[in-house]
Image (cartoon, rainbow, N blue to C red; front, side, top):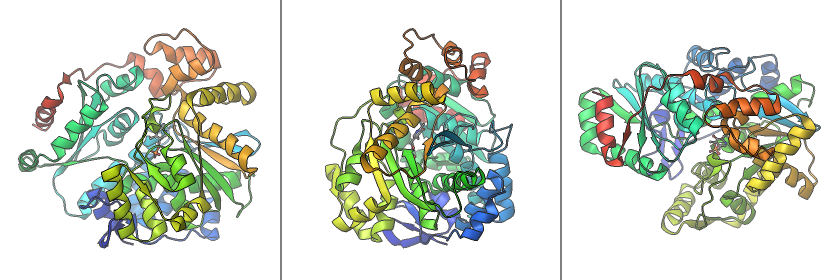
Length: 495
Ligand SMILES: *Cc1c(COP(=O)(O)O)cnc(C)c1O
């Protein structure tokens, strides 16, 4: 199977090449040329299997240049129970109330759904480097506003032939997120604070990537720079697995029968997670609607309802920060797959670049609306949902999951569609203790890591061990630099 660029379909690559490249050279995203078919027999065979076994089968369909044996080793390590994930199920489906199930994607080492892909990516990337004959060591550079940096650090920690360096904005991450990063363990990792906000850190990293002199110098020392960005195919593919795995678990739990259609409701930012659901649906998983949930940054809701994508609007800082995004990069893959035209996509993306806006054809809009629904809700409604669902069902969720849960309730009221729905839960409530406590009416929040115990006491639930352990962890990284000094940090890190 080949991978095509969404902006020039004559450019075709093997899976390993696509994973090493990340982005096609003219800016397009690498997307499968065809979709493997998921038959009923395949689903049936997966029913008794573990998450790891299902992952091998599903990923193998897309990775012809990888052996099953390789993938078994990767899945075994990436999703190891005990060492990496705190539940044997890896991504358990939790029954909340009649017709509503929650797929918990935060049982990995950093307690957010980014682990599902970033635990697997390092293995896919290092194997791809071997397959394409690259002999240098990869240095992964990340500018992070929170969840991605920590998940990438944990994923690449002590992985052979890689080093990872994360820059975070000194004034732009939560106390818990900062502690998660500065206490990072591993022999190949580096973490550095940058004075300024996320844009300053991100601009610095982009400048390092385009610094040809630096690249040459690092190349002579045996390194090349790479990124762990969510547009890499190696980050999307592992996410297809949990949609299919959840369907199997629902059958096994007697909630549905083989062939029944279900809905998924997904808290969305960069459109990577829900796109993986679309891939599963395209392969033949019985899915009726994919419901795209946004917070006040509701550019996707408007797009799916009207066919106009317009980023010219205020940017809101919300209680679900990982969804505070106005350009959802992975949407481009959906536009290509549904229009079948690289020229059309190129036009839309040029327009987005120039004017911040594009309008799709009526035909394309119809195709999107046939498979997707969309909705959004504000912080107050999401907070009410956290308190209410905890009160009535005893189920505690984080702010991102609460946005999806609220959007699902609204969708049901408006459409009357009461198909069983799986809500994707993307973070542990303990990653966003302050917002969750406030939602439940707590006025005085304890400082630092004490807030974790405060939420435990309030809800009589238990925090994930990696977050509880933070209090006793030694701080390893204390450096703060000007954006202008980031290049020197990279040189020092790779000296
Ligand atoms: C990244 C993230 C999202 C958004 O996922 P996309 O793939 O970018 O749409 C939602 N919730 C949490 C907690 C995240 O970290």
